[in-house]
Image (cartoon, rainbow, N blue to C red; front, side, top):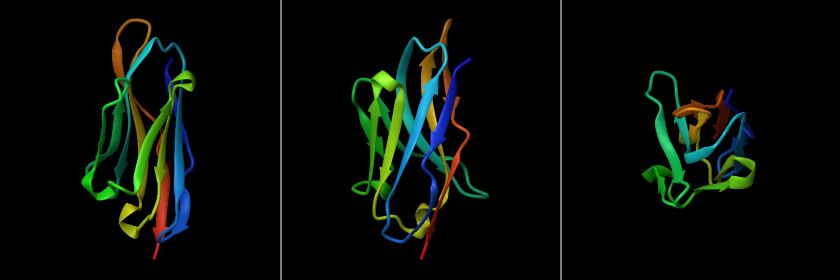
Length: 119
């Protein structure tokens, strides 16, 4: 069974940095894309950053220039380096991967990690 495990969340002050990690394990034959989403209470989950295995990368406008997504394909791991954090970045962050397992492609989600930025 494919599983995504996140780490790296926490609490920082405005202007601080955090690095999130998400490692996939299980019967993985291919990964099409890796990404990060975030969600605050009462709002829909929104895309923060995404990278395909072909190298195409997209960012939400509000994080451009501050966040960087990267991956270690050998470890099936995706990272999100977050710099110059503001209170508006406070949310639960979820990693997402489109993975081909034994039979077919599916979307998988991490358990979520809380990021809190204090003013």
